[in-house]
Image (cartoon, rainbow over all chains, first blue to last red; front, side, top):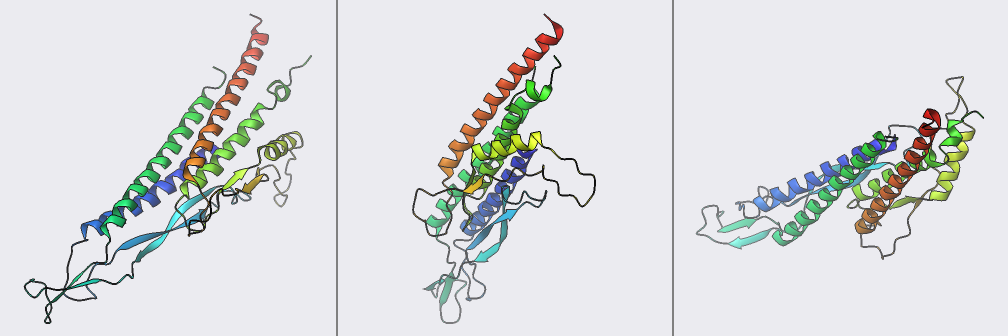
Amino acid sequence: MSLFNVFTISGTGMSAQSVRLNTTASNIANADSVSSSVDKTYRARHPVFAAAMQKAAAGQEDSSVGVQVLGVVESNKPLTVEHNPAHPMADKDGYIYKPNVNVIEEMTNMISASRSYQTNVQLAESAKNMLNKTLQLGK
Amino acid sequence: MAINFQQALGIHPQTLAVRAKRAEVISSNIANADTPGYKAKDMDFKAALAQASQKQQSGMSRTHAKHFDIRSELNNGVQYRTPDQPDTGDGNTVDAQVERNLYLENSMQYQASLQFLTGRIKGLKKAITGQ
């Protein structure tokens, strides 16, 4: 029954968007985590989405496509280097390294992810209503 | 006159199947609204319904494990949507607002078909009980 697949599909959408929300939260939380070397500095993380074909039934791969998170990649934008010898984390030359997190970008990302999540929830909700109505057929 | 349930219910059961399938296609689009390179799809309702009713009439039974199950697919009629906006840069052609409205429209049409079916069933019940 294809309506049940809607739950699977919107479920994949919800979990992908929540991964996105998670990385955004992690990026914002670490936006000000300074460190004393380039290697140890936090870098902005972003999930990579890809269409996931549902292999539930042969011949149906074409139409029912969920979404999957292929992985989380770290941004390779340059870090912010600041000369601040008074900082407790400063290296021997007096530099501290700040993450390459763009907080404004992350905020818009967060709103977009949360809207997409809500849309997926509404999909599941209306599929549920459709199924409920079908169960009451003929009454 | 014998009552044939296939005929008594008309085209509505097939319509429901196609509508449910379309709900699935559109929900795939919405789930992939942020997937780079994903192309939005939709169903050619007329073609899909024609195929569904044809399958209904000529449903072949499988008597051997290696026979093809030709009834299980309602796939013909699924086509890529023509985007009405230029590419945003990641190759994704899903317009979330359009898809949401189409999903809503589809679910209303699904419920309309359900109403028609309920009417038919009520008619049958009336005929059976004679009241």
